[in-house]
Image (cartoon, rainbow, N blue to C red; front, side, top):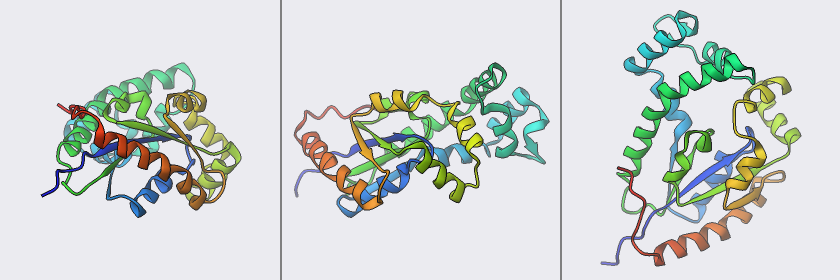
Length: 218
């Protein structure tokens, strides 16, 4: 039996609407992949009773719709650049980020043997410090007008809403600098994937030849 190939964990970052998820899915045409969607986990975490109790304590009933946290109402409290919203966002992150990380680590510790690439898709990868769970980081780039067109179509956002959301994240340039590779996704998805695959192939090959010091997720 051939030795098990070491899984390469690839984190994807970029501006809102840059197409991180779509580009990362293109790896499945070349590798056996598994995606860990930290944003989806974040939505699920809001349904945990322990998390709801802490959010109610921190924000009151104003962010609830009945017994459940309303993401729309919560967003009004935490997204934006003014001091009040920044402080509110910090309170929310202190509640949800540790639980999201715990669940991400749990999934990373139980990867099927046949998986070659794990994609970690997280909008706030750098803000939350989850990049330390990755072997390499890819930045998906697209100009503002392209990203705006995408979020207008897919999320019905205005330009002001996009700017408001992005004001709550690390700047585009800081994300770019933090990455090991930049993919231009201003054109077709096929072009973006063609850029990405050779880089991942090279990193995967290097990963197989490196000492067996895979990051711990304890």
